[in-house]
Structures are given as C-alpha cells and as structure tokens.
Length: 155
Image (cartoon, rainbow, N blue to C red; front, side, top):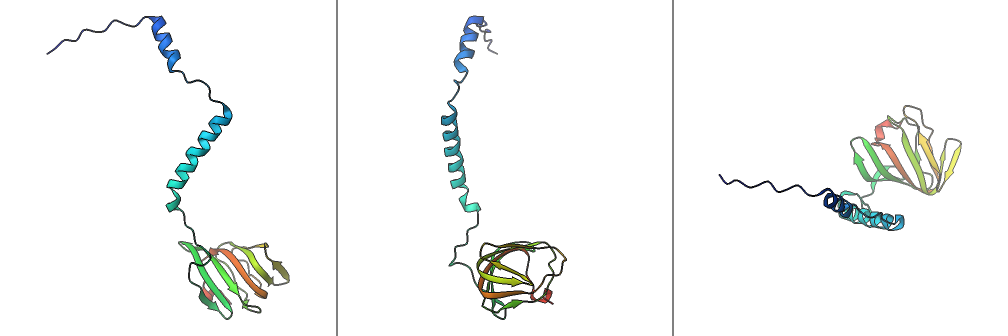
C-alpha cells in the first residue's frame, strides 16, 4: 500500500483569494433577462413536438345533426375541444351538459333562447342546468370545450 503524504493546508489569505475569484460578478438585470429569455426560447423550441396544433385545413368535419357539423380538435377522456359549424337556421335542441361547457362564437350569430350572441361572444353552459335551444341566426362557427357531445343527450 502506497502512502501519500497529506498536503499542507493553504494559507488563509490564499483561501480568501480563491473564494473571491470564484464569486460571480453581479450580472446586469437587462442582460440576465435576455439570457433567460433565450434559454427559455430554446427549451420551448425543443419541446414544440409535445404540443398539439390543428391547422384550419386539418381535421375531419362530421355530420352531427341537420345542418350541423362537428370537428374534433382534442379529446382528453370525456372532455373534448371541438368546433361546430351551423348552417343558417340549424338548431341544437334543449339539452343538459354533464360538466360545464365553454362556448365561443368565432363567426356568425347564434340565438340561445332569448340571448343573441355574435362573433367574439362567450357562453358558459353550466353542468346539469337545462340549456335553451341554440339556433344559427346566420351561418356560425363555434369553439366548444366540455363533455364529449352525444346526440342522445339532446332532448
């Protein structure tokens, strides 16, 4: 077995100088923000494939009822994000939702009972609350997020 001699301890002033040399200089706040932004942008770009993007020309429109078409954007269990396209006069009859349903009118105008809602309008259909019929006053495109839509839930 080889015996290695223990090196002599460093003088305190050398230890202090080494410590001071290892201390980072404070970074300018603007530079720190730029560095952070660039690092986060690179991480986001590397993780882009983990996101879901559906372009307007992608996806399949399916008949959902007379004058109504549905395009699924994303499903997570029984919660769906989807588009509904309604022809003028098309109607979704009175119904209930098993969970809250968010609806945004993207194009056109719909009538929900006595309420008229145009492009940019938002409507929240509450869970288990009877929902008035939805009628397209003019052709309409809706974005919805809620329970998987089922024709048999329409009463």
